[in-house]
Amino acid sequence: MTADADRVTAELLRAEQRKDLFEGTPPTGVSHALVLAAPYNCDEFVVLGNHVQLAGLVRRIVATARSALAGSGARVLPKLSIPVEVMAAVLATAGEGMDEVRAMLLADQIDLALHRAGLQMVEREQPEQAPALPPIQWSQTVVRADLVAGRPVFREVKHLAGLRHEAAVPCCGRPVQLEADVEAPAAIMCPFCGLLYDGELVEELDSGGWDDTRSFVALFTVTSSGLQIVKRNPPKGRA
Image 1: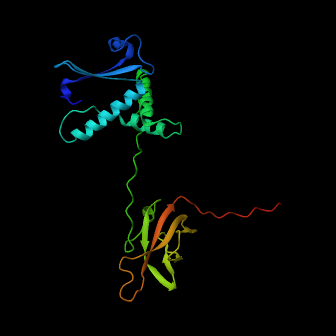
Image 2: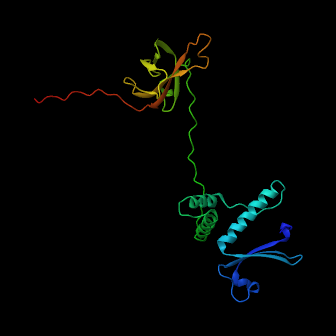
Image 3: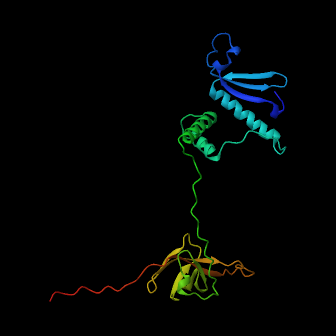
C-alpha cells in the first residue's frame, strides 16, 4: 500500500473496537487491529494479530520508510529515544529468549511506566577530565612544582652497553639505569625526593639511520609525588 503519508491515518485498536471486521468474536490469537485509512477515497487497510506481531510490523514499515525516504525531506515516524533503544538492546541480549520486537515493546512499556511515575531516564553526566599535562622535553629545565602525577618528562641518556642506558631522574638528577625493549616500564623511586616514576627508553624517530645505530631518550612519567622519606630514630633503651 502506497499513499501520501500526510493523508493516511494509522490507528492501533483492540479487536473488540472493530467488531465490524468479524462475525461474532475475533479469531483465536487476534487481540489488536492495525488500521491504515486514506479518508480521501475511503480506502482502509487492516492487519489483524496480537500486539507483538503488530509492533514488529510497524517497526518494519518505519525502517523501510526511513530507508526509502532518506534525504528526501519527507516526515517519517521519529526514532525511539536513545535510553529506550539501549534498554531494548540489553533486554534482547540478556539471555531470556526475547527477540528484538518483544524487547523494544517491553522497553517502551518500562519507559512509559517511569513517565507516569514522574521519573525519566537521563544520560549520565561524565565527570570533567583535567586536560592532559604537556610533556617536558629533554632540553627543558625541570622545577619541583612541574613534577605532578601523570606528567611525562623526557631526559637524555648515556649508552652503557648493549641495551642498557643511564639517565638522570628529573627531580634531583640521581642516575638510574634503564634497559630498552622491555615489556613494561620500570618502577623507580627517588629516596631523596620521595617521587615515584615509571621509567622507560623511547626510540627516537630518526633512530636506525644509515649505520643502523639506534638512539633512545628516557621517558619518566610521574606516578606519585606525595611520598615523604623520614629517618626513624632507633628506640631508646631502658634506663
